[in-house]
Amino acid sequence: MQNIGNLGSVSANIYTQSTNFQPLHQENASIDANVASGDGFELSQTSSDDMKQLRSSMMKQSVDIKTAQNENIADISAKDMASKAMETALSTAASLVPGAAGAGLASIRILFTNDIHGQVLPAEDKKDPELMKGGLSNLASVIKEKKTEAPSLLLDGGDWAQGTYIGGMDKGQTVMKVLNELGYDAAVVGNHDFDWGLKALDKMIQTADFPILGANIVDKKGDILPGTKPYIMKEINGVKTGIIGIGSEKTANDTAAENTVGINFEDAAKTVKKYKSELEKQGADMIIVLSHNGPEADAAMASEVKGIDVIVSAHSHAVINPPKKVGDTLIVQAGSKGFNLGQLDLQYDPKTDKVVSYESKMNPINSNTSSPDPQVEKVLAPIIEDVNKVMGEVVGSTSVFLARRGKFPETIMGNIITDSMRAATGAEVAFTNSGGIRADIKEGEITYGDVYNVLPFDNGLVTMELTGRQLKGVMEESAGRKRGTIEVSGMKMDIDPRRGDGQRCYNITVNGEPLDLNRVYKVATADFLAGGSNGYTDLTQGKNVKDENMLMRDALNNYIKAHGPFDESNARIEGRQNYTGPMPKY
Image 1: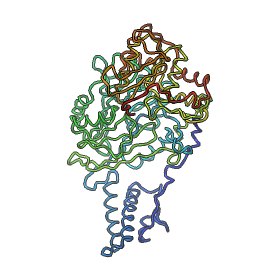
Image 2 (image 1 turned 120 degrees about the vertical axis):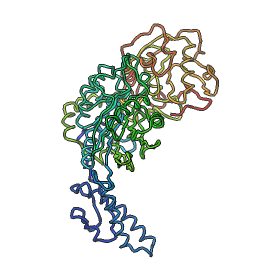
Image 3 (image 1 turned 180 degrees about the vertical axis):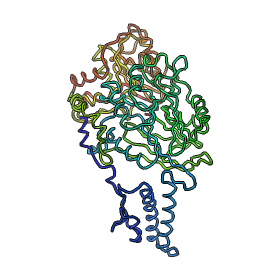
Image 4 (image 1 turned 45 degrees about the vertical axis):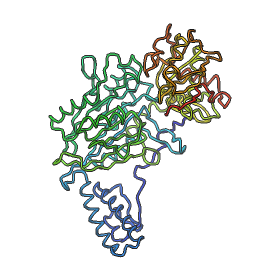
């Protein structure tokens, strides 16, 4: 079902789109030889940067002229408006052209990505199957073009490789080699960059030929991770720009416990204050924070720490455009998987030491807007055939949509996954966290690539013994949360979150029999949960814990082969978690 495709098949010229409109006066269309046209203005690839900006402003003004004509504004002649439009456009172009003095302003472009999650290859658009989204080769082409237009910084917010087969096959090495070709100025460590352990993270850091930041990620002695820096200083268009990198404060809870042994994730605001002061002593004019804490935490940090000009946010996979403004701080984020290239154009006034204006946009990366970059293609060429072969293997089929989200906290995909865990281990009950289920599977053939996308994290299966009281405790914790419930197999219950602690789950059965609080049950779960991550304390207290030496992904793959094809008889909502009160929001 998953369509990896040939990298070369998604090519399209970056600037095949042109903006045309009918000019009021034909003489205005001859503003330069490259854009003269009987039908109006057309953006030219060969024009200079300042002419591109001027034409853009002229187009905007021309629309206003035409509107005035249509509304029969008699007291202002169209010709006068055209003259005024020309003056305004020239003035605008002068102030926006990189390096143009104008009122002594400096132009800086910030290009940014975040949460790429190993999405090296283009992915099928769910809304338009004919469209292929993303792909780092396509992203590289757009980045290179955008860099030619203005003095630029290219930044990434972390979570580089975990999430796809191509990202995981060599624990991020291929991804980092590709990112090297994109020309990043800096990146920050994300929580999922710890998912393969500290050795794999260190190897990714060593492979990167751009600075890796992590000011608040320190060992027990307070030293930052080897190979990382707390910040860098770059001079862009005469502006000394300090860039501080901040990792997620919650990383230890968001990855397996053994991956962060001996590592502390310190308070973001305190860390930024410390290094902001250092940078300002070194003459920094602007302060940018690369943060993997998410926009809510970033907004709180901006409120607490004055003087941050821009926060390039990550972790929540949100598209934040226009920027969120907290005081004088602009917060931006570009979604995820390289499906967008974020762009923030700033006008900085060195006299007032402030950003006096800005423009922002998201540049979509898809088969209609971009084409593969030759250098990235060269890096990927040796592995594409093998990746396509592995990911394209058909393992089953389904006539129903296998959804990971829906109207109910219980999901079809969650049911199948937890059923596969019980089938692989012989457990009576299985639990997994809904946040670890990362994709749906649509109707049709199911490939190994689909299975991998559903469970991209290398979570292993473990079994343990828990009492009935502990089983209830797991589900009570889940029912008390507003989002991110546990998925379960082998149990059914009614749930009312409005009830008090210990009373939310009732009428509980295990495989058709009433739950016995004192009986011991065999339980299967993810090693991620058994190690204490995600806050399910009861799952850390099991007896006779056994590593089953099997990835959850492999258990699911085997189950699909053995129990498919799937239809409404074996892939449905069964009432395992029957909410009688308000349901969690996803």
